[in-house]
Amino acid sequence: MIKEAMECEVTEVHTDTVARLKDTLLSQEQFQNLGTLFKMFSDPTRLKILSALFQEELCVCDLSELLEMTHSAVSHQLSVLRQNRLIKYRRSGKNIYYSLDDEHIQLIFDAGLSHIMEG
Image 1 (cartoon, rainbow, N blue to C red):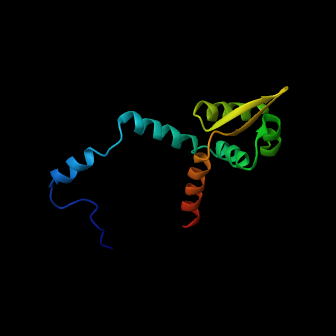
Image 2 (image 1 turned 60 degrees about the vertical axis):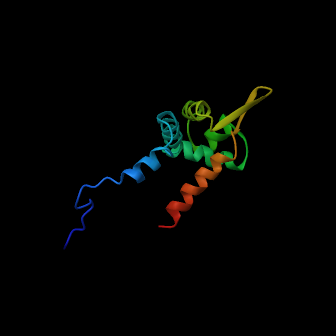
Image 3 (image 1 turned 30 degrees about the vertical axis):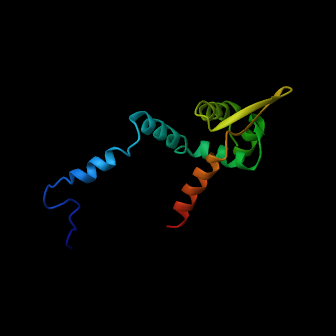
């Protein structure tokens, strides 16, 4: 079996292309923030929580029962999601209800799901 080369056979930098693209790159901080956002989607438990919150706002007790997890484990993941601005909360009496921070969260989730389902 012949292995296809994965690199150029000669070293030639296309300086005009590189210069043009350098001006379009995000800043290091923006890439860091984007990487952090995608890390939020790398944990199956967080994905389950987000998926449930796509349907409606829920409290920790509801999520714990739905996901068959301890309150502590769910609370920890909710805290991580909230710190990274994927979800928000509101207090109603003695209960705290969680919901998506904005519609972008479901768009990112749906794009990822669409990608894995096409294969």
